[in-house]
Amino acid sequence: MPDANDNNSPDPEQDLAPSKSAVKRQMLALQRLGESLLELNDKQLTQIPITDEQLLLALRETRQIRSNSARKRHLQLIGKLMRHIDPQPIERAIAAIHQGKQTNVDALHHLERLREDILAAGISGVELATARWPEADRQQLRQLVLQHQREIQRGKPPAASRKLFRYLRELQDFYGDAD
Image 1 (cartoon, helix red, strand yellow):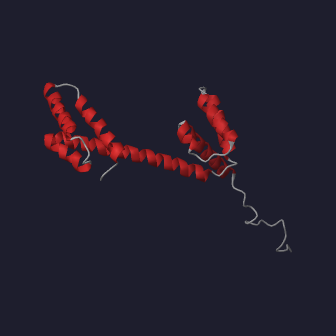
Image 2 (cartoon, rainbow, N blue to C red):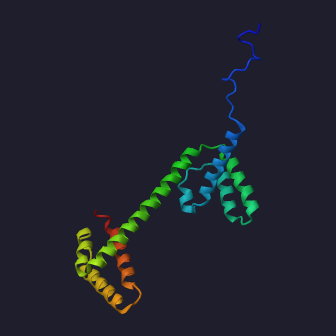
Image 3 (cartoon, one colour):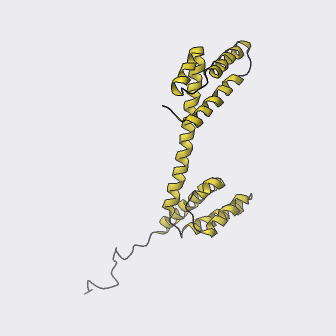
């Protein structure tokens, strides 16, 4: 009769090693994380908590590679190097960078809507900007709105509209978002 403590009996707790497929999925996830690191510029890359110099070197080298097969091999190397580090801080840092980008994009869209509202309201639209930024130059805003109206009447390109957007962006950068 086999003993309950016999080593030949299959014990599910002893077989805790991940399956081959799970290991491959994990390696591919690390490789994709490495690819997302390659999409960052140098300034953004310095914000990522990577202490492994070999990984940083591999990332820089991969940016130089133009051959598709060589790049693919180098991405595999990056994935291999990333197995030895904790990917969670890197993922959080990348998410924070993408969140910052999205915030900037949202702010620009908000400014575009404000510009369109100002131009649609005409001269009275100047009050929309001055309500938001009391420091704004009313005269400059008024001139840009009038210039935009003249451009529309003459069928010219919307140069005043672009100037107005730049001015609104300067106001936001300098005085902040008053909303």
